[in-house]
Amino acid sequence: MGLNLQNGERLRPVDLARGHGLSTQAVRNYEEAGILPAAGRTPHGYRTYTSLHAGALRAFLALVPGHGHRTAASIMRAVNEGAVDEAFRLIDESHAQLLDDRRTLQAVESALRDLEPTTASGTGAGSGPAAGSGSGGTFIGPLAHKLGIRPATLRTWERAGLVRPRRDPLTGYRVYDEADVRDARLAHQLRRGGYLLEQIAPLTAQVRAAGGLEPLEAALRDWHGRLSARGRALLAGAAGLEAYLHQRRPTRA
Image 1 (cartoon, rainbow, N blue to C red):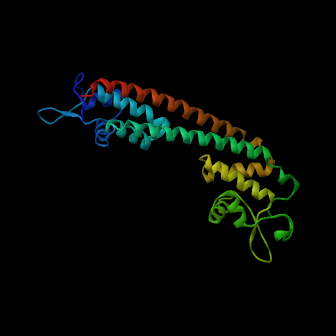
Image 2 (image 1 turned 45 degrees about the horizontal axis):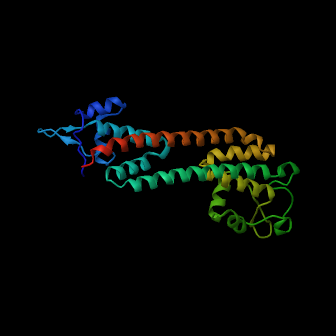
Image 3 (image 1 turned 45 degrees about the vertical axis):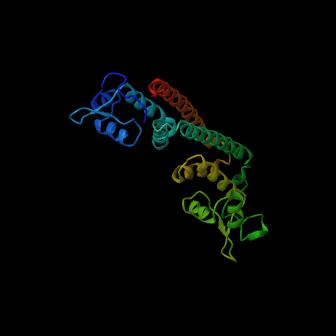
């Protein structure tokens, strides 16, 4: 509210837009969304922007790759409303999410290294007659509880080909043997890592066939790369926002 927006040359919407490969409508939309401070107006009602608006736009575009559009917009709104601590909280949440994703990746790698190549022993889904609860298999409820998911999720994964439990011939219940449990654990970790069901299905199929970590090495390298890129994007966003905060500082009334 106490900002002097006339702290530099006047810029038209098209001036801001051209400098960042945007449309003038996008610039107006960003202002209306609170991502940019409110524009000044000429006597004829045309919007005028200043270097402060250009700094806000640069900060927002720097924040988007690391935080996503929605969070970046919330950060900018908080700053423009003077709620800088709220902006910092949102930034902290993105860093916490990145840390959680790194831990998830570590968990995936650890889980895979701990997995025994059970498919090689012929104990995969569908092997042998009805073992029910007598051959070390587990049912859908206990497995879902162990993974912290709903039984409906396991049924969805089955339809997508991620797990292939056999049916007990006496009860008709699904029975998950060691290989099925491994596949369910793997699917659970990859889902937490952001992979889609259609991306996971070929990976689990490869693991079933190969019985090892090798088929997932490329995916894990890609995952590492994406996390590193996000980390750098968060740093770039922080630098952009700091420049904008510094720019705002001397304009306070």
